[in-house]
Length: 373
Image (cartoon, rainbow, N blue to C red; front, side, top):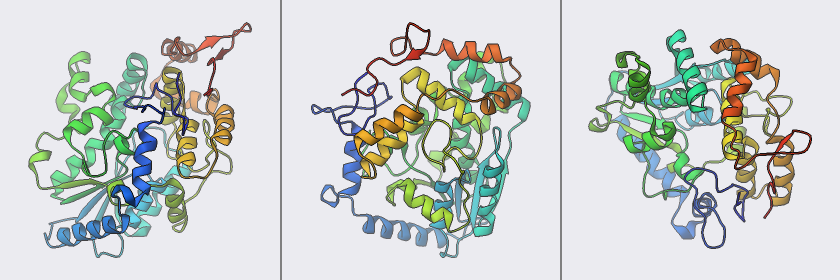
């Protein structure tokens, strides 16, 4: 594995590009984001956002002015926060597709107290459990269709209620891969959905055909057919506001946002992964397949923002990234999709990338030359 010479993202990360100096495209995108000399004037961006809000208010939408997909995490609370004070009718849409935590429920309940209406959508549970099991066993990703549901369902609701704006979170193509510039795309599209929401472009239509599940039962997992012909603006918040986890945490805490007393499993932060438990399995499989986990993501963000050094980041990654799954996650997950513990671990091993992982003389897995360079 080759690592970015500025942060510590490896070349196994999908869509990441390295320049001749070994600097990854995510770092280069961040430099563009924080440097006005490269054309990003965030004061001007906020003014553009305000102009969009003013335009939306003139449309006199029948029910709501803006829809915000929310998890109850720091980022979605910040998105709602940025809409307040504009005399808007805000509909926050939450997808409850997994194993909710108590702290996650508490933080989600803050959103209607802030001044938004909250719609919680729970998919047909037996069907969704089947989809999670298919994703886990056959694709090594229990969130395979959960991620498409998170992105697609709010768009369906916006169409149904004729809501003129959808305020999405960050554009992951820019923030984490640096594939586009901030001037190239500020809104979601079908192509973006297929590349970044759908794992390897696998959609509900593909699952319907392969597993003989009626497509009419999976419409909420797919990008709406007629969305791009509508006049709805579905924009990324990160196109108009500097996207930064620590800043969002400070904003969320002003509304009573709770964090953990200890760090989240698999990373050193105590304010992520609070909402539900299945994403921890998703992140662990990423570690097995690509050789890096959640701590790497967070450490690289902190390096770019000047909060920690590259050497300090290495220590945090070594300590947290490769932690084994605890029973707290495993027990709830295998009960949720009804498989045995033995089968669960056998499936994990099917997705371990043997080009990355090796065994030592004691039978323990490790990554040779991990974080070297």
